[in-house]
Image 1 (cartoon, one colour):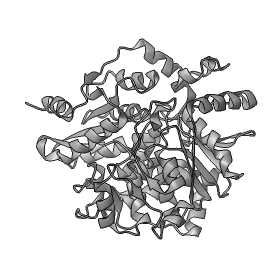
Image 2: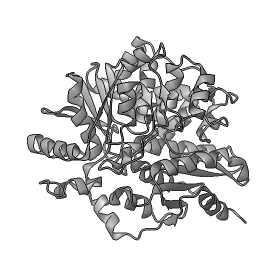
Image 3: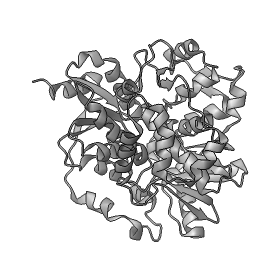
Image 4: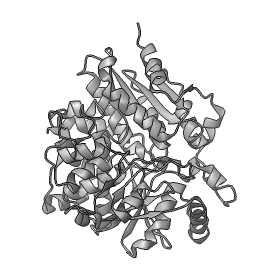
Length: 459
């Protein structure tokens, strides 16, 4: 399968190139030239498969020129052997709030483990085919960094650098990143916000030619492998619901999770819609409510993984909104965020927008939602999941499936006066407070970050 840029100004490339890169040379994001479509009868037959077996069927068409089925099957099985439940994800039914898809049963208690554990295995395989040291780059506002580090630390042929906004993520999330003790892990606390970190990562990729001895690879959701890995559980959830259609209610910041659901529908999955739940950093809620894509300043919230003011993966949906006019995508994105984008007069926007609903949840509403759910059900939800629970009633639909993206124990500051919280903290998350942290603080300057990375490969 070949891939091309959302901005249409780069040559088509194979999966290995997509896997081991970040943005395309023209600054766009990679998309497959043709999305595989599974016919209804074939999708029905997938209902009897285990999660690992389903992942093999969904993922292999996207990388058939990179791995044969047997090698991919082995990587999938190894990746998901790290999870605490057999089939990676599970549904809990809570009568007051409906069905909850628990995505946090991986090693770092976050949904990002699902993609990261697989991505690390694929990158290790890719390192055999590349004559440069693979250096993984990532920017994180929370769980991406810890999930990436946990996945990559066991592969000594990979180095990983994670940029995070200094003092703007939860202490648990920071300690998960900074206590690995692995020599191939480098955590960089940047004196800025997540958008600064993300911008520097993109710039490093665009300046790849200045780093002769290493090959930068993206671990963020701009990496296509993250998207396809997450699309699998949209299919699996349907089978867990006895083939019933559902609305996926998703805490969303960077739009990667939501785009994975949209991709699943393009592959043949029937969904009743996708609900985009935001915190007070509501770029996506404003977009789907008004049709205007515009950036605001990032504000620290109780749901830090969603503290984002530019939803990078939305650019992929723009290709559909603009009916494959990639030159127009390029024009608009080259002027964004300085200039906002108005989609209201575009023919395809109304149809695509009707598939999405959205909501915004303030910090106080997050706290109230968490307490209400605990009091009514005894079930604990993290603050990100709370935005999906709180926002979902506006859909007025009984088929809602809420995606629970992290274990509540990762955000103790939300549960100060919530009964039963302490008893639900996993031992692994307690132990990280006994470990020594290791990270480097850097100024909010691209040159400082580039120089630090270069210095580790100077000899």
